[in-house]
Image (cartoon, rainbow, N blue to C red):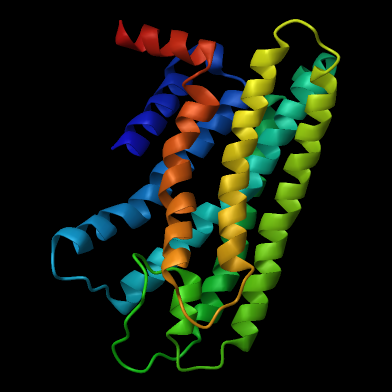
Length: 268
């Protein structure tokens, strides 16, 4: 409820308040949309399994959950890199910000995120669909996640592990490197500014912490092939499936003065 409410408020605020109609808030609204969908794909079924003794999912339902999660998570990986670039231009090249990050550029970047995430997730699910499963299987996880599903297959998963490793490297290491580079440049630029430096630094550090948690835990799961799911794997999955979607509204938006004004306007 916290995740859905927080992210929902961001989306509604950006939609109705014209002061928030710029690239930064369009990115934030898309991030909130991804967080709501990602949580909705996993948490309702997980809560059902906790409070009932059913704890089953159909083969088609499992594949659909894997595909939706991969699509949303991979799209978010790319979107976060574009968001870091947006902040880099705003702080390091402010005079050209309105030209570089105009509406057309923003829509193009968001579209690239969704299309790239869709293509790679479709490739991933194709290889998973080709796997053979011997009768009813037990997935040692709280949702159908690709690594756990691969471990339950009767087929040879060596090719699938390679595909996951290559895809994970492209979607995790490359965007994370770009994000870190952008924030390093931002920090160097902030060192030249005397006024309001502490607030800017605290914002950058907050963003970096969330980014590192998201990418770090995802890299632990998808760039580290294993033979069996452990308790630590499931605990790590909690961070990028539930913790970061809940934290994102507070870190990126709800501490923002413009968002506060938009929310107060909504309350009236």
